[in-house]
Length: 283
Image (cartoon, rainbow, N blue to C red):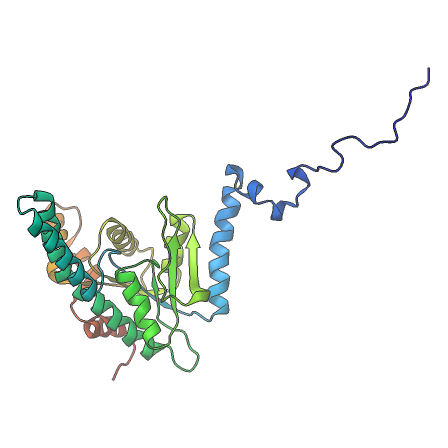
């Protein structure tokens, strides 16, 4: 018996599945765990190519706390905190908040130092179209903002390497727009910090700042890199935070390891150390 053939197309013929989307345009497909190595490669290459196109030849990394704001902002926060504490004098939490903000006000001077340093370096090294010793930060607020802001003050380029985090964040407004990057992977972000770096300048900061500092010191200690000079800004702060001498006394590092970093207090002192290390004549 002859079967009847329908002239109507099957009901799904005009509804292609995601398999029909070209692989490079299928964003859901690109997020699969199996594509992680491809995403890592793309993340490394994108920032690399853009920096080449923008002529970035060398950089100076500036790290420091996102919570250290400029002095005027901290003074305002302190005034409000003191007013709130005065309303409930026995409130221990409000009293602690006042004490913390007072300490942050002492550290807020580093915002100005970071800004001045960036202004000094950027105006000195970005001349006649050259992009040497370009400031690169983590792209956030606080000390990072100050460093990007200093470059913007003198109409120079600066870089921001942001990272996607569970809580919402935004790049600070002083980063050169074409050099504002967002990374998914910490490892690739760290690679881009160091690929062109000639110096690491570290201001007071927390876990993130310490992480980047010790990673760089480890690379220097193990000989994985030799071109970077590390400058810690604020000797008193860093000597209180890290007991370097105890590490030597316990045989956990050597006395020679203490030469892997230097201290400075002012923007000019930081730049003089970097310039001397890299053979730059500043006179």
